[in-house]
Image (cartoon, rainbow, N blue to C red):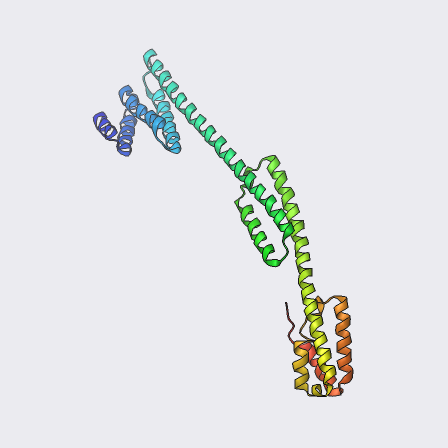
Length: 275
C-alpha cells in the first residue's frame, strides 16, 4: 500500500494519494513508516499549495493525524523525539499560516478603510454639488449618485472616525435634501403661479371683451376650462388667489342664473394642470 501511495504522490494525484495514505495510516495507526509518509505529505501540501484555505485544511488534517498517531504509537524515547520533531514542523507551518492570515487580514482591512475613505470623500463632494443644484433634473441625478456611493460603503468595517464622519454626513444630507426639495418646489410653484396669473388675465380679458359670446355655455366652458379652472388653487400663492377670486367674481357677476350654475359645475369638473 505504501508503494501505491508513493506512486500517486509522485504522479501529482493528490486526491488519490490522500485516499490511500489515509486508509493506510488508519489501518495501521502505530506504524511509524506509514504515519511518516502520510503526515509528511500532508505537511508538504500545507507548506506549498497556493490556496490559503487548502493549506489551512491540510495543516488541520496533519494535526489530527499526529494526535491519532501519538495515541496509538508504541512510545519509546526515539518515538517521542520523532513526535516532538513532527509537532515542531507543524507548529512552524501553522505559525506561517497564521502570519499570512494576519497579513492578509491587515491588508484587506487597510484596503477597505481606504475604500471607505474614498467613498466618504465622494459623499462630501456630492454634498457640495447638492448645495448648488438649481433644478429637479440635477437634484435627481445627485440623489442617485449619493445612493450609489452609499451602497458601495462597507459600513461594518468603519473606523470610529469614519463612523462619526458618515453619521454627520447622513444628517447633513437629510437636512440639505429636505431644504432643496422645498426650494425646488417653491421654484416650480413660482412658475406655476406665473402661468396661472397669465391664464386668469386671459380669461378676464377675453370675457370682458366679448361678454355676449360667453352666454353660450359651450363657449364659456371652452374659456374657463383652459384658463380659470385649469390650475390647482392649493398651489396658488395668496396674491394669485386674490387675482383669481377677482376674475371669477367678475365673470360670475355677469352671468345669468343658468350661466352661474354652469360655471359652478365647470369649476368642479374641470381637470387641473399638475405642472
